Image 1 (tube, rainbow, N blue to C red):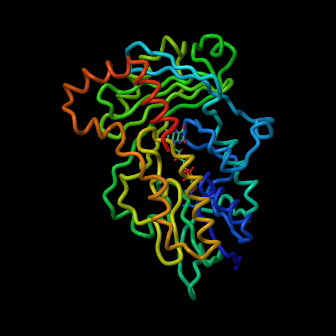
Image 2: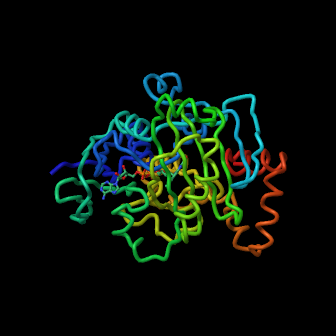
Image 3: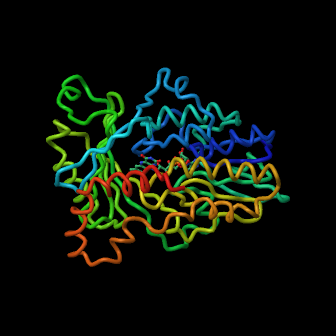
Length: 358
Ligand SMILES: Cc1cc2nc3c(=O)[nH]c(=O)nc-3n(C[C@H](O)[C@H](O)[C@H](O)COP(=O)(O)OP(=O)(O)OC[C@H]3O[C@@H](n4cnc5c(N)ncnc54)[C@H](O)[C@@H]3O)c2cc1C
Protein backbone atom coordinates (compact mmCIF):
# COMPACT_ATOMS: atom_id res chain seq x y z
CA UNK A 1 0.00 0.00 0.00
CA UNK A 2 1.27 3.49 -0.95
CA UNK A 3 0.31 6.00 1.76
CA UNK A 4 0.03 9.80 1.34
CA UNK A 5 -1.68 12.73 3.06
CA UNK A 6 -3.51 13.64 -0.16
CA UNK A 7 -4.29 11.62 -3.28
CA UNK A 8 -5.12 13.61 -6.42
CA UNK A 9 -6.90 11.87 -9.31
CA UNK A 10 -5.81 13.70 -12.48
CA UNK A 11 -2.53 15.36 -13.45
CA UNK A 12 -3.81 18.25 -15.61
CA UNK A 13 -3.23 21.88 -14.58
CA UNK A 14 -5.66 21.60 -11.64
CA UNK A 15 -4.08 18.47 -10.13
CA UNK A 16 -0.50 19.62 -10.68
CA UNK A 17 -1.15 23.11 -9.24
CA UNK A 18 -2.76 21.53 -6.17
CA UNK A 19 0.15 19.13 -5.63
CA UNK A 20 2.71 21.93 -6.15
CA UNK A 21 1.00 24.13 -3.55
CA UNK A 22 0.59 21.22 -1.12
CA UNK A 23 4.31 20.51 -1.37
CA UNK A 24 5.01 24.18 -0.59
CA UNK A 25 2.82 23.76 2.51
CA UNK A 26 4.72 20.62 3.56
CA UNK A 27 1.89 18.21 2.68
CA UNK A 28 2.71 14.95 0.98
CA UNK A 29 0.68 14.24 -2.21
CA UNK A 30 0.37 11.69 -4.99
CA UNK A 31 -1.08 12.23 -8.47
CA UNK A 32 -2.73 9.34 -10.28
CA UNK A 33 -3.35 9.83 -14.03
CA UNK A 34 -4.52 7.40 -16.66
CA UNK A 35 -2.22 8.99 -19.24
CA UNK A 36 1.53 8.82 -19.59
CA UNK A 37 2.96 12.33 -19.98
CA UNK A 38 3.53 14.13 -22.29
CA UNK A 39 -0.07 13.57 -23.39
CA UNK A 40 -2.34 15.57 -25.69
CA UNK A 41 -5.33 17.48 -24.35
CA UNK A 42 -7.96 19.04 -26.58
CA UNK A 43 -7.57 22.74 -25.81
CA UNK A 44 -6.80 26.05 -27.55
CA UNK A 45 -3.83 26.53 -25.22
CA UNK A 46 -4.48 30.24 -24.65
CA UNK A 47 -3.51 31.40 -21.15
CA UNK A 48 -3.77 34.76 -19.41
CA UNK A 49 -0.68 36.10 -17.59
CA UNK A 50 -2.24 35.38 -14.17
CA UNK A 51 -1.58 31.70 -14.84
CA UNK A 52 2.18 32.26 -14.86
CA UNK A 53 1.98 34.59 -11.84
CA UNK A 54 -0.02 32.17 -9.74
CA UNK A 55 2.37 29.34 -10.51
CA UNK A 56 5.43 31.57 -9.97
CA UNK A 57 6.68 30.57 -13.42
CA UNK A 58 9.47 32.42 -15.16
CA UNK A 59 8.33 32.88 -18.80
CA UNK A 60 11.95 32.92 -20.04
CA UNK A 61 12.73 29.63 -18.35
CA UNK A 62 9.52 27.97 -19.53
CA UNK A 63 10.05 29.12 -23.12
CA UNK A 64 13.39 27.30 -23.34
CA UNK A 65 12.56 24.42 -25.70
CA UNK A 66 8.78 24.95 -25.41
CA UNK A 67 6.18 27.08 -27.17
CA UNK A 68 5.25 30.26 -25.28
CA UNK A 69 3.67 32.54 -27.85
CA UNK A 70 3.18 36.17 -26.69
CA UNK A 71 -0.17 37.68 -27.74
CA UNK A 72 -0.58 41.44 -28.12
CA UNK A 73 -3.58 41.81 -30.46
CA UNK A 74 -6.81 40.08 -31.52
CA UNK A 75 -9.01 39.98 -34.60
CA UNK A 76 -12.68 39.62 -33.63
CA UNK A 77 -15.98 39.53 -35.47
CA UNK A 78 -18.95 37.38 -36.42
CA UNK A 79 -18.34 34.24 -38.48
CA UNK A 80 -18.45 35.04 -42.18
CA UNK A 81 -18.20 38.82 -41.71
CA UNK A 82 -15.27 41.20 -41.68
CA UNK A 83 -13.06 41.26 -38.58
CA UNK A 84 -11.71 44.23 -36.66
CA UNK A 85 -8.29 44.29 -35.06
CA UNK A 86 -7.58 45.44 -31.48
CA UNK A 87 -3.95 45.96 -30.46
CA UNK A 88 -2.32 46.30 -27.07
CA UNK A 89 1.04 47.85 -26.37
CA UNK A 90 2.00 44.87 -24.20
CA UNK A 91 1.71 41.10 -23.98
CA UNK A 92 -1.82 40.40 -22.73
CA UNK A 93 -1.85 36.60 -23.07
CA UNK A 94 0.23 33.63 -24.18
CA UNK A 95 -0.21 30.55 -26.29
CA UNK A 96 1.08 27.21 -25.01
CA UNK A 97 0.90 23.58 -26.18
CA UNK A 98 -0.88 21.48 -23.62
CA UNK A 99 1.36 18.43 -24.08
CA UNK A 100 4.34 20.58 -23.07
CA UNK A 101 2.64 22.76 -20.46
CA UNK A 102 0.92 19.92 -18.58
CA UNK A 103 4.04 17.79 -18.47
CA UNK A 104 6.09 20.74 -17.21
CA UNK A 105 3.60 21.38 -14.37
CA UNK A 106 3.30 17.70 -13.51
CA UNK A 107 7.05 17.09 -13.22
CA UNK A 108 7.54 20.32 -11.28
CA UNK A 109 4.75 19.55 -8.78
CA UNK A 110 7.00 17.44 -6.56
CA UNK A 111 4.23 14.86 -6.11
CA UNK A 112 4.70 11.13 -6.38
CA UNK A 113 3.33 10.42 -9.87
CA UNK A 114 1.44 7.28 -10.89
CA UNK A 115 1.24 7.61 -14.70
CA UNK A 116 -0.69 5.33 -17.02
CA UNK A 117 -2.87 4.34 -14.05
CA UNK A 118 -6.63 4.85 -14.57
CA UNK A 119 -8.61 5.26 -11.36
CA UNK A 120 -10.70 2.11 -11.41
CA UNK A 121 -11.94 1.76 -7.81
CA UNK A 122 -12.54 4.24 -4.99
CA UNK A 123 -13.03 2.89 -1.48
CA UNK A 124 -13.14 4.30 2.04
CA UNK A 125 -11.28 2.41 4.71
CA UNK A 126 -10.82 3.55 8.33
CA UNK A 127 -11.50 7.20 7.38
CA UNK A 128 -8.97 7.19 4.51
CA UNK A 129 -9.55 6.90 0.76
CA UNK A 130 -8.04 4.04 -1.20
CA UNK A 131 -7.73 4.18 -5.01
CA UNK A 132 -7.31 0.96 -6.98
CA UNK A 133 -6.87 -0.94 -3.70
CA UNK A 134 -3.30 0.34 -3.30
CA UNK A 135 -3.00 4.17 -3.15
CA UNK A 136 -4.19 5.60 0.13
CA UNK A 137 -4.77 9.20 1.27
CA UNK A 138 -6.52 11.06 4.08
CA UNK A 139 -7.96 13.58 1.58
CA UNK A 140 -9.09 12.76 -1.96
CA UNK A 141 -8.97 15.45 -4.66
CA UNK A 142 -10.87 14.91 -7.92
CA UNK A 143 -8.94 16.61 -10.75
CA UNK A 144 -9.81 14.27 -13.60
CA UNK A 145 -11.43 16.86 -15.87
CA UNK A 146 -15.06 16.81 -17.05
CA UNK A 147 -15.30 13.00 -16.83
CA UNK A 148 -13.46 12.81 -13.49
CA UNK A 149 -14.04 9.43 -11.81
CA UNK A 150 -14.19 11.08 -8.36
CA UNK A 151 -16.85 13.58 -9.52
CA UNK A 152 -18.86 10.72 -10.94
CA UNK A 153 -18.47 8.57 -7.83
CA UNK A 154 -19.74 11.54 -5.81
CA UNK A 155 -22.90 11.85 -7.90
CA UNK A 156 -22.05 14.01 -10.93
CA UNK A 157 -23.34 11.32 -13.29
CA UNK A 158 -26.81 11.71 -11.77
CA UNK A 159 -27.10 15.47 -12.28
CA UNK A 160 -28.53 17.17 -15.33
CA UNK A 161 -25.65 19.09 -16.92
CA UNK A 162 -25.35 21.29 -19.99
CA UNK A 163 -21.68 21.46 -20.88
CA UNK A 164 -20.04 23.55 -23.57
CA UNK A 165 -19.20 21.28 -26.49
CA UNK A 166 -16.18 22.01 -28.65
CA UNK A 167 -14.11 20.61 -31.49
CA UNK A 168 -10.63 21.58 -32.52
CA UNK A 169 -7.62 20.63 -34.56
CA UNK A 170 -4.04 21.42 -33.49
CA UNK A 171 -1.04 20.56 -35.64
CA UNK A 172 2.47 21.70 -36.56
CA UNK A 173 2.46 23.39 -39.98
CA UNK A 174 4.96 22.35 -42.64
CA UNK A 175 6.85 24.92 -44.72
CA UNK A 176 4.18 25.17 -47.42
CA UNK A 177 1.41 25.60 -44.83
CA UNK A 178 3.38 28.23 -42.91
CA UNK A 179 3.83 30.23 -46.09
CA UNK A 180 0.12 29.97 -47.00
CA UNK A 181 -1.23 30.77 -43.50
CA UNK A 182 -2.31 34.39 -43.00
CA UNK A 183 -3.02 34.02 -39.25
CA UNK A 184 -0.37 35.99 -37.33
CA UNK A 185 1.12 34.42 -34.25
CA UNK A 186 0.72 37.44 -31.95
CA UNK A 187 -2.88 38.04 -33.15
CA UNK A 188 -5.34 35.19 -32.46
CA UNK A 189 -8.65 35.43 -34.32
CA UNK A 190 -12.00 34.95 -32.59
CA UNK A 191 -15.33 34.85 -34.47
CA UNK A 192 -18.70 34.53 -32.77
CA UNK A 193 -21.62 32.50 -34.03
CA UNK A 194 -24.48 34.74 -35.19
CA UNK A 195 -26.75 33.40 -32.42
CA UNK A 196 -24.02 34.15 -29.82
CA UNK A 197 -24.17 30.56 -28.59
CA UNK A 198 -20.41 30.17 -29.01
CA UNK A 199 -17.38 31.15 -31.03
CA UNK A 200 -14.65 29.82 -33.27
CA UNK A 201 -10.95 30.60 -33.09
CA UNK A 202 -7.79 30.42 -35.18
CA UNK A 203 -4.74 30.57 -33.05
CA UNK A 204 -1.18 30.33 -34.31
CA UNK A 205 1.49 29.48 -31.75
CA UNK A 206 4.89 29.74 -33.40
CA UNK A 207 4.55 27.10 -36.15
CA UNK A 208 1.59 25.33 -34.60
CA UNK A 209 -1.97 26.13 -35.69
CA UNK A 210 -5.02 25.56 -33.52
CA UNK A 211 -8.48 25.95 -35.10
CA UNK A 212 -11.67 25.20 -33.19
CA UNK A 213 -15.18 26.15 -32.20
CA UNK A 214 -17.15 25.76 -28.96
CA UNK A 215 -20.87 26.18 -28.31
CA UNK A 216 -23.21 26.14 -25.35
CA UNK A 217 -25.84 24.54 -27.56
CA UNK A 218 -24.71 21.00 -28.46
CA UNK A 219 -27.04 20.61 -31.46
CA UNK A 220 -25.42 20.49 -34.91
CA UNK A 221 -21.96 21.20 -33.52
CA UNK A 222 -20.19 19.55 -36.46
CA UNK A 223 -22.12 21.71 -38.94
CA UNK A 224 -21.11 24.86 -37.08
CA UNK A 225 -17.49 23.70 -37.00
CA UNK A 226 -17.45 22.89 -40.74
CA UNK A 227 -19.00 26.18 -41.75
CA UNK A 228 -16.54 28.07 -39.53
CA UNK A 229 -13.56 26.25 -41.03
CA UNK A 230 -14.94 26.95 -44.51
CA UNK A 231 -15.31 30.66 -43.72
CA UNK A 232 -11.66 30.74 -42.56
CA UNK A 233 -10.27 28.95 -45.63
CA UNK A 234 -8.88 32.15 -47.22
CA UNK A 235 -6.98 33.00 -44.03
CA UNK A 236 -5.80 29.47 -43.20
CA UNK A 237 -4.77 28.83 -46.81
CA UNK A 238 -4.83 24.99 -46.78
CA UNK A 239 -6.94 22.06 -45.59
CA UNK A 240 -6.65 21.28 -41.87
CA UNK A 241 -6.73 17.82 -40.23
CA UNK A 242 -10.19 16.73 -38.98
CA UNK A 243 -11.10 18.28 -35.60
CA UNK A 244 -11.63 16.26 -32.40
CA UNK A 245 -14.23 17.02 -29.72
CA UNK A 246 -14.52 17.42 -25.97
CA UNK A 247 -16.98 18.91 -23.44
CA UNK A 248 -16.69 20.91 -20.21
CA UNK A 249 -18.80 22.93 -17.80
CA UNK A 250 -18.85 26.69 -17.28
CA UNK A 251 -18.97 28.11 -13.76
CA UNK A 252 -22.55 28.68 -12.66
CA UNK A 253 -23.95 26.02 -15.01
CA UNK A 254 -23.10 23.03 -12.85
CA UNK A 255 -25.27 21.38 -10.29
CA UNK A 256 -22.27 19.24 -9.18
CA UNK A 257 -21.51 18.91 -5.48
CA UNK A 258 -17.88 20.02 -5.29
CA UNK A 259 -16.84 18.96 -1.80
CA UNK A 260 -17.79 16.60 1.02
CA UNK A 261 -16.31 14.70 3.95
CA UNK A 262 -12.61 14.30 3.07
CA UNK A 263 -12.94 15.01 -0.66
CA UNK A 264 -13.01 17.96 -3.06
CA UNK A 265 -13.21 18.56 -6.81
CA UNK A 266 -11.00 21.05 -8.64
CA UNK A 267 -10.75 22.37 -12.21
CA UNK A 268 -13.06 20.93 -14.87
CA UNK A 269 -14.12 18.19 -12.47
CA UNK A 270 -15.83 20.97 -10.48
CA UNK A 271 -17.07 22.83 -13.60
CA UNK A 272 -15.21 26.12 -13.17
CA UNK A 273 -14.46 27.52 -16.64
CA UNK A 274 -15.12 31.25 -17.03
CA UNK A 275 -18.64 31.75 -18.35
CA UNK A 276 -17.90 34.35 -21.05
CA UNK A 277 -14.70 33.06 -22.62
CA UNK A 278 -14.69 29.39 -21.68
CA UNK A 279 -11.17 29.83 -20.29
CA UNK A 280 -10.62 26.88 -17.97
CA UNK A 281 -6.89 26.66 -17.28
CA UNK A 282 -6.78 29.65 -14.92
CA UNK A 283 -9.78 28.52 -12.83
CA UNK A 284 -8.32 24.99 -12.76
CA UNK A 285 -5.07 26.32 -11.32
CA UNK A 286 -6.73 28.74 -8.91
CA UNK A 287 -9.06 26.07 -7.56
CA UNK A 288 -6.11 23.67 -7.15
CA UNK A 289 -4.21 26.27 -5.15
CA UNK A 290 -7.23 27.21 -3.00
CA UNK A 291 -7.93 23.52 -2.32
CA UNK A 292 -4.30 22.96 -1.28
CA UNK A 293 -4.32 25.94 1.09
CA UNK A 294 -7.52 24.76 2.75
CA UNK A 295 -6.33 21.14 3.00
CA UNK A 296 -3.09 22.34 4.62
CA UNK A 297 -4.94 24.51 7.11
CA UNK A 298 -7.62 21.88 7.81
CA UNK A 299 -10.43 24.18 6.65
CA UNK A 300 -11.82 22.38 3.60
CA UNK A 301 -15.37 23.21 4.70
CA UNK A 302 -14.71 26.73 3.36
CA UNK A 303 -13.90 25.52 -0.17
CA UNK A 304 -17.29 26.22 -1.82
CA UNK A 305 -17.46 29.70 -0.29
CA UNK A 306 -13.90 30.55 -1.39
CA UNK A 307 -14.66 29.53 -4.97
CA UNK A 308 -17.93 31.45 -5.02
CA UNK A 309 -16.14 34.53 -3.70
CA UNK A 310 -13.63 34.31 -6.53
CA UNK A 311 -15.71 33.18 -9.49
CA UNK A 312 -19.21 34.55 -8.92
CA UNK A 313 -18.31 37.96 -10.30
CA UNK A 314 -19.38 37.53 -13.90
CA UNK A 315 -23.09 37.13 -14.59
CA UNK A 316 -23.99 34.61 -17.28
CA UNK A 317 -22.15 33.77 -20.47
CA UNK A 318 -22.66 35.57 -23.71
CA UNK A 319 -25.14 32.82 -24.42
CA UNK A 320 -27.25 34.14 -21.54
CA UNK A 321 -27.96 36.93 -23.98
CA UNK A 322 -28.53 34.30 -26.63
CA UNK A 323 -31.12 32.59 -24.44
CA UNK A 324 -33.05 35.76 -23.61
CA UNK A 325 -33.23 37.61 -26.91
CA UNK A 326 -35.24 36.18 -29.85
CA UNK A 327 -33.03 34.55 -32.47
CA UNK A 328 -34.20 36.84 -35.29
CA UNK A 329 -33.25 39.95 -33.27
CA UNK A 330 -29.92 38.50 -32.12
CA UNK A 331 -28.72 37.63 -35.58
CA UNK A 332 -29.29 41.29 -36.50
CA UNK A 333 -27.65 42.92 -33.47
CA UNK A 334 -24.68 40.57 -33.00
CA UNK A 335 -22.80 41.63 -36.16
CA UNK A 336 -23.43 45.30 -35.36
CA UNK A 337 -22.21 44.99 -31.77
CA UNK A 338 -19.12 43.10 -32.84
CA UNK A 339 -18.32 45.63 -35.56
CA UNK A 340 -17.96 48.32 -32.88
CA UNK A 341 -14.31 48.90 -31.97
CA UNK A 342 -15.36 50.07 -28.50
CA UNK A 343 -17.41 46.90 -27.85
CA UNK A 344 -14.65 44.63 -29.15
CA UNK A 345 -11.98 46.18 -26.94
CA UNK A 346 -13.89 47.03 -23.77
CA UNK A 347 -16.45 44.25 -23.58
CA UNK A 348 -15.33 41.25 -25.64
CA UNK A 349 -11.61 41.45 -24.98
CA UNK A 350 -11.03 43.38 -21.76
CA UNK A 351 -14.02 42.01 -19.85
CA UNK A 352 -14.87 38.63 -21.34
CA UNK A 353 -11.46 37.35 -22.43
CA UNK A 354 -8.88 39.18 -20.36
CA UNK A 355 -11.27 39.61 -17.38
CA UNK A 356 -9.76 42.98 -16.45
CA UNK A 357 -12.82 43.50 -14.23
CA UNK A 358 -11.91 40.73 -11.75
C1 LIG B 1 -11.78 22.60 -27.45
C2 LIG B 1 -11.38 23.22 -26.13
C3 LIG B 1 -10.60 24.37 -26.14
C4 LIG B 1 -10.20 24.96 -24.93
N1 LIG B 1 -9.40 26.05 -24.97
C5 LIG B 1 -8.98 26.62 -23.83
C6 LIG B 1 -8.05 27.69 -23.85
O1 LIG B 1 -7.58 28.09 -24.92
N2 LIG B 1 -7.67 28.25 -22.67
C7 LIG B 1 -8.18 27.80 -21.46
O2 LIG B 1 -7.82 28.36 -20.42
N3 LIG B 1 -9.03 26.75 -21.41
C8 LIG B 1 -9.43 26.14 -22.55
N4 LIG B 1 -10.24 25.05 -22.50
C9 LIG B 1 -10.62 24.50 -21.18
C10 LIG B 1 -9.44 23.75 -20.57
O3 LIG B 1 -8.92 22.80 -21.50
C11 LIG B 1 -9.85 23.02 -19.29
O4 LIG B 1 -10.64 23.88 -18.50
C12 LIG B 1 -8.64 22.56 -18.48
O5 LIG B 1 -7.92 21.58 -19.19
C13 LIG B 1 -9.05 22.00 -17.12
O6 LIG B 1 -7.92 21.44 -16.48
P1 LIG B 1 -8.09 20.22 -15.46
O7 LIG B 1 -6.76 19.99 -14.86
O8 LIG B 1 -9.26 20.47 -14.58
O9 LIG B 1 -8.51 18.98 -16.37
P2 LIG B 1 -7.74 18.25 -17.56
O10 LIG B 1 -6.78 19.15 -18.19
O11 LIG B 1 -8.82 17.63 -18.40
O12 LIG B 1 -6.91 17.10 -16.85
C14 LIG B 1 -7.56 15.98 -16.32
C15 LIG B 1 -6.58 14.83 -16.18
O13 LIG B 1 -7.26 13.74 -15.54
C16 LIG B 1 -6.87 12.53 -16.15
N5 LIG B 1 -7.95 11.54 -15.96
C17 LIG B 1 -9.20 11.58 -16.47
N6 LIG B 1 -9.88 10.47 -16.11
C18 LIG B 1 -9.03 9.74 -15.34
C19 LIG B 1 -9.16 8.49 -14.68
N7 LIG B 1 -10.28 7.75 -14.74
N8 LIG B 1 -8.09 8.04 -13.98
C20 LIG B 1 -6.93 8.76 -13.91
N9 LIG B 1 -6.78 9.93 -14.55
C21 LIG B 1 -7.81 10.44 -15.24
C22 LIG B 1 -6.66 12.90 -17.62
O14 LIG B 1 -5.78 11.98 -18.26
C23 LIG B 1 -6.06 14.31 -17.52
O15 LIG B 1 -4.66 14.29 -17.55
C24 LIG B 1 -10.65 24.42 -23.68
C25 LIG B 1 -11.43 23.26 -23.68
C26 LIG B 1 -11.80 22.66 -24.88
C27 LIG B 1 -12.64 21.44 -24.85
